[in-house]
Length: 252
Image 1 (cartoon, helix red, strand yellow):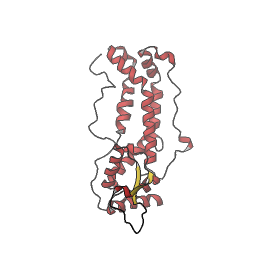
Image 2 (cartoon, helix red, strand yellow):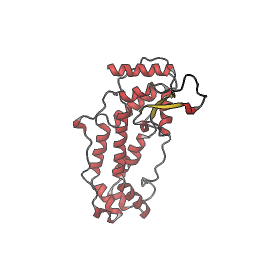
Image 3 (cartoon, one colour):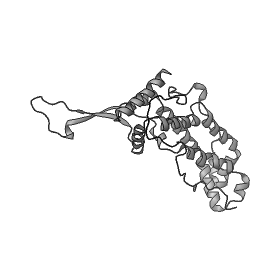
Image 4 (tube, one colour):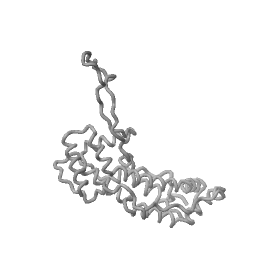
């Protein structure tokens, strides 16, 4: 059966970052509501530990492509339940959606742009430049060699700003899970069967990637991270807006 069969390796690319609403390029005030920004919770409650997988593939299941697929079909509800747990739990995926939306619309655009550039460049250190100690009788020549970089700290979880979370959830996991049935597989071509087998082998890695992204989001939306952001080279106006948000969050 061709035509409508889902090909998990050839999913059309999203045309936009669905997890983020349109960005505002300027802010005219600092009276910001923090109803949806839950940045003061920096650790998972004991009763919110992620569900663990109790249905690992056995070595014998690797004997054929169909066995991988049949295993996932048999435990389909188990995987869907784990996905729903990631979505709905306290400070899970939906919590991350809300905070990213708030961040993209309420924080200074200058700061957002700087942080996104840092994420793309895998540069997470916050630092400042200071001149080296010299003799007062012999001023140093103007040279970069006469200055040193002092690292203040390292920002955490920056990749949540550059990762399409909805694509990870829906394209890589939920949509294929919903479509995968025994009837579908029975009508697949050999090539389609191979694609489904590869996806089934990777299902645990897709779930782990989502779990890791949620953990990164928890680190990103923390007071510690925001205090480090105050040390970034941004304008006084942006710094003032950021400070107002942090101060209000700290006292809420």
